[in-house]
Length: 248
Image (cartoon, rainbow, N blue to C red; front, side):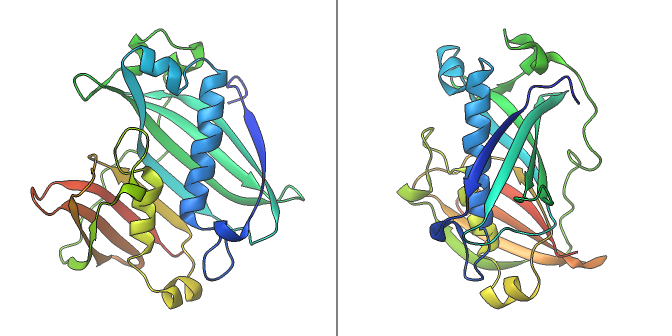
């Protein structure tokens, strides 16, 4: 992947970035990803302002995070990102986080689509006048774009009403807020005793202010170390996200 442009940023884990165990929150991690990806996209001529001029926005559609060790409060980390090609409608971007000694902490793959703000439909990245790196077709990483399997038995875990603090500049629930809802499906004791090692999220539909979202979940029948979580619009029944949490 050496032909793809790279950007790195240094972060110091602040007190407001960590959870009750003193480790980096997944929501804070997603915010780090958004920040560095946005800066890099603008640097490459395909940032938020450029797309708005074309009547489009970037929307995160898929993410897979693999954690070796979440950094703790007060530590410094280096976050690296780069685009890794296009597969179908998805512009794929990779992230890696390392500690002060260069040791691997975590990695992630994301899949982004360009959404036409007039039709509210995705368009093919390759057809827009974008940078050359967004025209390189590459195979997707294994299982990255595969559908998530819904367990035979899932139950309602809790209900969430979309509030103003959940929204981003597009007036939709921010992708980090969905991850907060997923993590909130577990107790602090569960999370401390069995840290999440892999998180896969498929963003399926936009949730907006005032909607009631039913958060449901169930254990994977074939692997006790995996738990499925989904959010569905209470009024329509339409899923807005699906997630698979893995502890091993």
